[in-house]
Image 1 (cartoon, rainbow, N blue to C red):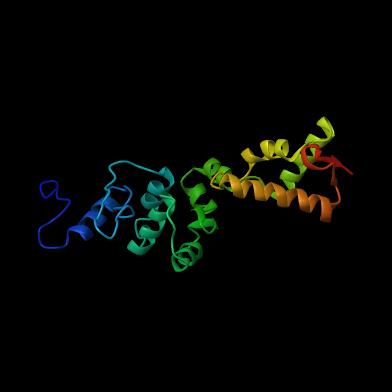
Image 2 (cartoon, rainbow, N blue to C red):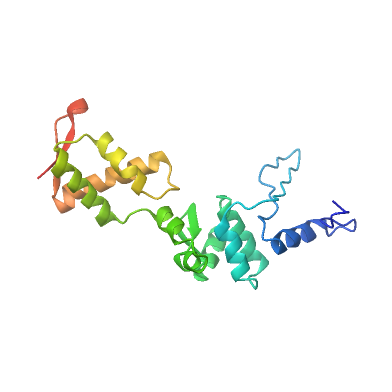
Length: 195
């Protein structure tokens, strides 16, 4: 690593490697797999998220703190609330904790708008319209089928449990607030129908 100029022998190696990875627009050093008894260092020699690399190319004046925060976002690692506020203030990230992603402005600048839209999922009115359209065409439908319909349209980074909760909340809102659908039957026979 000394011959590759990635470390030096005076004690500045970690900082030098961090700056070298940044100059190459590669992901930063990763210590996340370290334990109390051992230090594990991962050095990436390839891109993880093209958005991140394009963002660094477009904004070479970003502070090292900002670059580290964005690096953690691209690796889907948690960031502190302070870091999230700072990145959001700069217009670099969107989303809710812990599922942050690059902002629409960044996506537009890096020509990755489709990835951005996919990571956001469809808006609630559009999801509701899909449910109504499905019920109009196919009649009474169990929730599991509605989940199957909507899961692909929800934000890509949500867990399956969070997607289930989102569908459940959407259906409850459509029943209680919108009064556009209602449920009938119990247990295995429970289905959603148009009002």
